[in-house]
Amino acid sequence: MQVKICGITRTEDAVAAIESGADAVGLIFYPGSKRFINPPSAANVIANLSPYTTVVGLFVNADESQVREVLACCALSQLQFHGDESPDFCASFDRPYVKSVPVSDTNQMSAIVAAHTAARAFLFDTQVPGEHGGTGKAFDWRLMPEKNIGHRVLAGGLDAENVAEAIRIASPDAVDVSSGVELMAGVKDHDKMHRFIRAAVQAGKVAKQ
Image 1 (cartoon, one colour):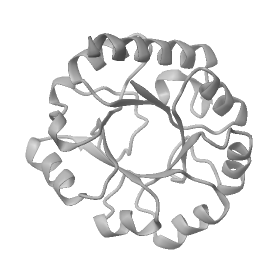
Image 2 (image 1 turned 120 degrees about the vertical axis):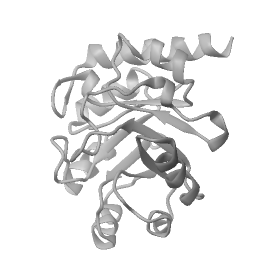
Image 3 (image 1 turned 45 degrees about the horizontal axis):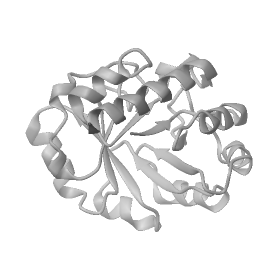
Image 4 (image 1 turned 30 degrees about the vertical axis):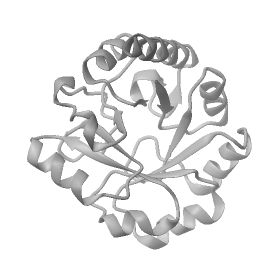
């Protein structure tokens, strides 16, 4: 079970996440987020990580110049889009990308998945009007689409106490957490990260048995 710790704003949190076993860290370049990080600060965080660490940059309805400005100074491994970005836009930056899918009715989710044929994975998150993730609210994990759509990432309201049950029900390929491992918005609790990753990895092993 792969784990991404999102909403990183501090180098020490990124390092602690990786040392605890996280497969990826997420940096949010959406100014409307409480976990926003500017490109120079993000570059400093990345510079202190192992060169083989997966670093994901998250955007919400950014224009092309904004994304390219970030890419010019930040060594991002993947991009993650949480807005209404078109498939062509998402695929235009020579990086693998993950498309966020708000969990709603089946037709709406299927339409997003069908349109983004080039997506590396789909991240299923709780639909909250006016929000783009990081709400700390979970959805009904039984609504997670079946495995035949490709790689599926589960997000939304996860923490160390519920992630095992979420994995058992939804059977995702990876999990993504932000608010569930924080002291406050943008400041991670290192013990919570460690416990979350341990619980997710163990649940993933059980799911494969």
